[in-house]
Image 1 (cartoon, rainbow, N blue to C red):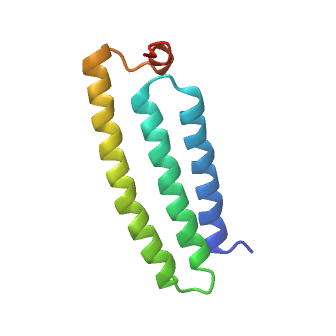
Image 2: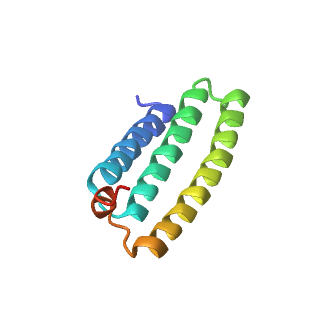
Length: 103
């Protein structure tokens, strides 16, 4: 029989794969940031899944996930502000075009 934490771990693994696809294949900077956020959320889900093996959730896993969510929100805010400045300066969010614009 499949235990619930195994289902959560499988869902987290699938979300990591989806996030890595978004980071690796998309040209748009916003889609890349969303892929990174999907990976961050799935890592938190994996921590909770592995912390709930005995039927109860480990408080250490919960605290790590809460701190990870807070740090992820800060990283997303900084990434979005950088994205806005890049769009204002270059007029594009295409990462391949921005790689050619080295100083």
